[in-house]
Image (cartoon, rainbow, N blue to C red; front, top):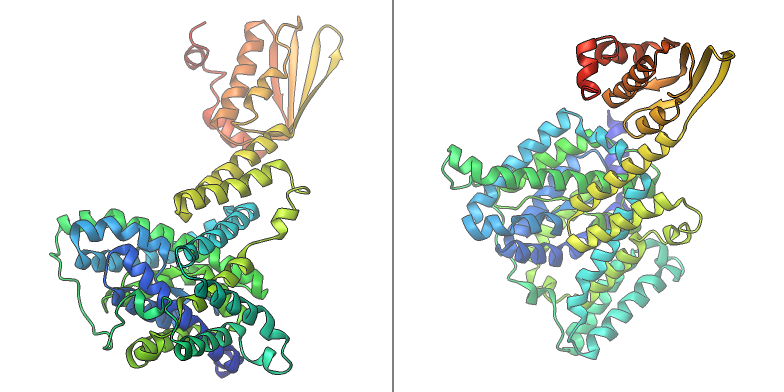
Length: 496
């Protein structure tokens, strides 16, 4: 028990502590920005990030992953807040948590196995682009000082790791933030700082229950928003967990992560916070800064609260240029540059799925829609590919009297037409044997195709024998085939 605790919490204490502080600093402006997007007070996003980070450290299924208030979730809250107010948002957050816990117990995370690698790559690349695009407002219509500070920040981030001893001990993003803040405070240059993003809270959060009527009308208002938040939150969290699995070469418990996200959102809603989920950008910052264990997530949450409540005067002095530099690093590090090189090597279908996922996600700013389109395209290409892997050959058993057809491959909705077209119904012959020992019938469309073949041969006066059906295919054919039912035959063939 102690060894497990030590492995999960204490085995990388220095790296986790420093990484957690870096993440906390980067979370502050993002939490404020996401609150503004959702149309609520900045403290709603900050309290949410604190609560979700701390709770998920204990309940989550992926150590080293950062969860907090996110832009994808904030975009879904705008209409609810505008039409009904903050209290209904808090109620929707609680219901979202309940749905996510149910999803965990139903093991819905197992559906992630249907998400192909090309969709994950497209998701990652789209997120990298969106993270970079989110920094552009801080780099447009500004003085040259902002560009100079951002460039200096990037130089520190990429150059500091080469400094002997210290370079491998202290995360370069933390050095970037500290150095640029010191420069900003000493020179007094007029550029935007964290303090300009919104007022930081000056007190610790307190327990509260949403002030909404507990009736069916309230449920009908918050239900559609909660369902959308549940889907987007779990989707982003599962995809982020997959990416962190790859980065750290470790496995995560995604169903536990579903439950953990739910518990964290309930905790957030009960202290006046909005719903959140895993953050790819912050999770990458954490891993790149040396964070590996649950401790890094816990420290990020606690440090965030302590900074905004007790060190607000200092935190508000952090120039936005420093955080922009950190997020540009995250964007560059997140993007899968190998996928560009692989465009020449990979099949066209794989490339189309990846590019479509990127295009739709960036175009809609909705990760759920982008991933849905990617999964749909991948499924269509797969069905088409499997449908083409079918061969039907024939040989004369008795010249002019009997022919045997050998079917090899998968017969389902995508290959049913090719299955029918492979038979010669106009051949004048007494008997046809269809050998199905190397074929498999998957669905009703396949059974209907078999029915049509048998019926067409019989209408030409040819006897038909089916042989070799495997047990699974025989079950489907016996249950749904109608070629031995005269009434059903007439209905299937349109009465002619």
